[in-house]
Length: 135
Image (cartoon, rainbow, N blue to C red; front, side, top):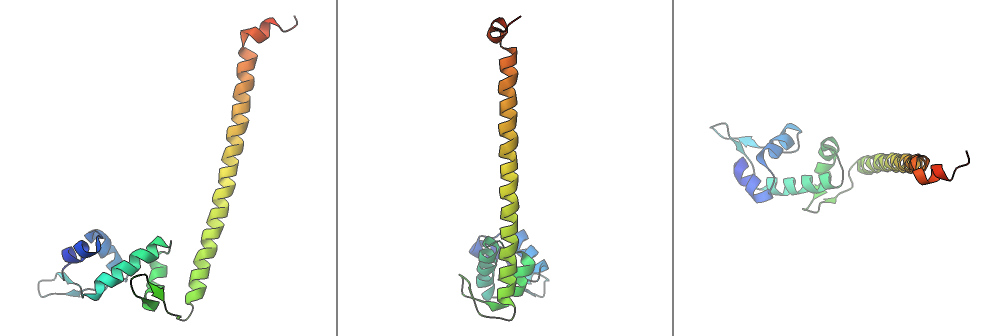
């Protein structure tokens, strides 16, 4: 099948399919006219790629994992170093989440401190508080 048909069947834009090819995730043949020709298995491969991308894996990691994938879900067969790759990715995500949580707390702290200063500033500028202040 041509790239347009694969795109229609999978809902993935042709430029993304070409990107997957450039990353070594899809391997189309070439027709006599030079057009990409995909096998019927490409539909399943694209579904697997999309699911693995949803899991937060990079295309490089997917390239390593894809030979271990079966079915559209996909299920992963135990391949050498597969669990190490998945655990390493999970560890990276956990570290990123921890960084985001710290950044979020720092922003909350800045907002709270700034809101307190704004409140103090308006109290200092409030004419009713100036009149009652001792001279």
